[in-house]
Length: 318
Image (cartoon, rainbow, N blue to C red; front, side):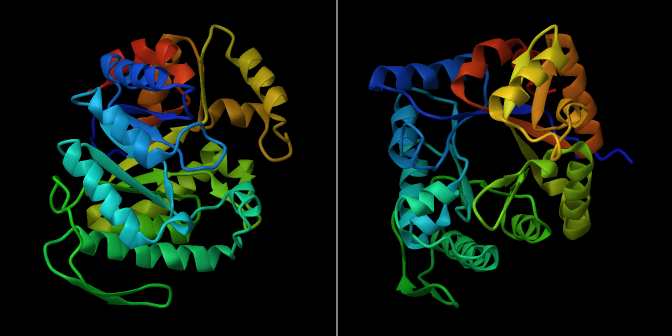
């Protein structure tokens, strides 16, 4: 059964880093000039730039581009510290922040720093409390919070964000519990790949059928609020080509994708991938918006911006 929230398309790019100040500034300007709504930065130790400072640098050379995080790993920062930094970025960018929150999950981030990778239930529980604390700290009243993981006493955090009551919050997930959290606490729900307890990704969760299931969870949990939520998806690879099947085969080989987890046919149909000509991708995105209600498309990596720009021009705002 088709699902539609009636929202127009918008597009973001999740940057993986630049080698210099000028390269990063050029990336931000290009994203804005090409019509992308949002420039986001990932929060992993292997990416080229740290998110907080790079977002502020991008703000200084743009005027309309929104600044996002996909996503801040909660285990890396106390929520009081992140709330203050996020409010500062929002204030100094004249209200352009989109605050993405996640648990932290990638095993290398934990192994290389000696931090324990706690079971998913513990990490999700921490994020549940952190999201509440951050939203409260964006308000005008002193915050007192006592939970299982965090305690805050009488804190009136400064500065306050420019966007009120707070910047749009994005939370994603591939499990019912994470998507439930996103529905409760976020404005933007990112329909994500499921991550495993050991810090890997479950590629089988990227199929069209798995995405149907996740969106139905969101719809059931949200009820009458479903229309208020913006649905996002991170596209792991977007390849504009006249030979989509060959491109998908080549990508699967390069990435070492296990066909037992996701077949080539499923990869071609997966909402987390885009293969085809400009016209084919436009048609695919329209069909997927009707099917899933997903209108906010984020590309992975700056290198996709140029080839995808004509699609952004055709679909943004429609």
